[in-house]
Image 1 (cartoon, helix red, strand yellow):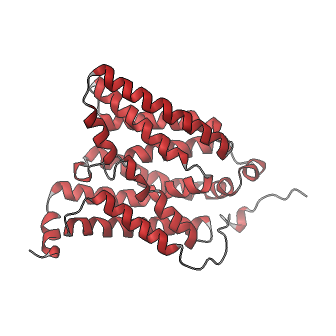
Image 2: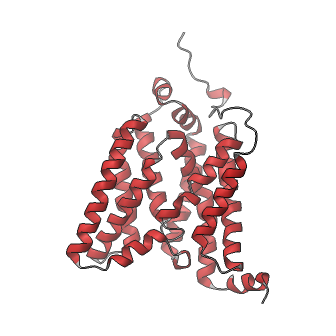
Image 3: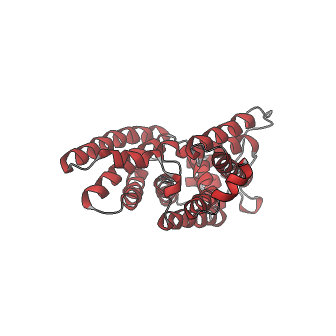
Length: 287
């Protein structure tokens, strides 16, 4: 059977259709999370949320609740909890290190005390794209609506915050509330991608498209559009390649996204991205 025929046959299966739908929905929202991570310079957040997700999974298995739902709740609470420490990248980095240590220790303790098989908890961290459920699609669909809507609604405030926190404060932006919202969305996005690529490979859906887009875009709007476009291309192409050659989708998506990011960095840089705000919403003068 040809590779094209194999892909056509596989696309008739409901789990494959759900996996493809999940990747399409994730491409509409998760690359925007990457733009936030890069703009706020909060790279440690995604590592911390992977550990918090494991704690939520362990708690879910202990209590007999849905592990992914528990991971979503745990990550959302953790994102909101560390927001007061996000006044600068250094303060947040220290908090993330502490959070990672405490979360992994608590998760391992829960698993040990409960007698729950740890293999099931750790398996979710590696992802199982064909195990995507309607509930997972609902979470990804909500993110695909909420994240672009937030960027359209608060574009000026986000541009100021991602460019310079102090400038945003002086311009009247509700920095603390907006930061809390962004960190919660980042945390939920990491947990929401668990069944797609797993928490350990979530960069393929979030960070790598944003890094490539930052090189190609010249404003917040263009960077965001580039990130979503790259996410769509990488997700669709990587998924089809994995189906055609019977390869694990997670690593294929990471390699595809990484190749695009490397190619983008070979493009001669014309100028540093400016995170511009619209002229009609110019920053008040201090004079």
